[in-house]
Amino acid sequence: MTAFVVAGHDGEDTLPVSVVTPSQTHSINVRVAKPNLWDYPDTDALISFDTSLLIGVRTADCVPIILHAPDIGAVAAIHAGWRGSLYGIADRTVEQLCVRGADPTLMTAVFGPSICWRCYEVSEQLAADFDRVGFAHCLHTAPNIDPLTHSTPDPSRPHLDLEAVNRTRLLSLGLQPANIIASSLCTRHTITDGGMTMPSYRRDGTEQRLVTCVALTGD
Ligand SMILES: [Zn+2]
Image: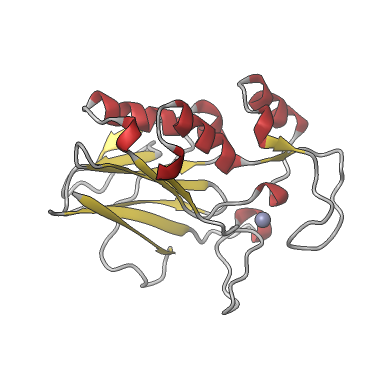
C-alpha cells in the first residue's frame, strides 16, 4: 500500500472526490473511518484502512498532520491546534495505529501548511502550559519583525512553534527524523508567486479552511 496527500480550499471545487472529514472540536478523540459513514462527531483525527476513502482535516492556522503506516496499510489525518498539540492528539493517533500492529519506525508523517512561530503569539499562560509539559524548546521570544505586517511585535510576548511540538511528540513515539516531511508554508504570512494566500484565522478571522487529505492506493 502507498498513500497520496492532496490539499485544497474548503468550499471550492478543487478536490477530486468527496473528502471524509470529522466534526473537529479540538479534542484528542481518534476514530476509524468507515465506508458510507460521514458523521464523526467530536473527533480530531481519522484513521483509514480503506482504499475507497479520502480522509482529511480542515484547518486555518492549526497543524494538519498526515500519517502513513505502510506495514498495516493505514493512513491518518490529524487536526492539531494548540489544544490538540498540548494534550497529544498526535500521540493518541500513533497509539491507535500501534495497537493495530503498526511499527512507528516505519511510519511517514507529513505536516501540511500551518501558522509559523513568528506569526503565532500566545498568552503567557499558554506558554507556561507548554513549558510545564516539556516544550520549552518550542517557545520563542518575539521576532524582530512580524513577517506579515513588517511591524515590530511586543518583545515580551511569547511565540509558539506548534509544528515543533508535534514533531517532538512524533519523534518521542519512535518516528524517524527522515520520515517526517514538513511544508515550509505559513498560513498567515505566505503569499505564493501567483499571489495566493491560504486560509488563516489569525490573519483575517476567516471561516474558510484548508483541507489536507490522504487516501490509500492499492498495490
Ligand atoms: Zn508566518
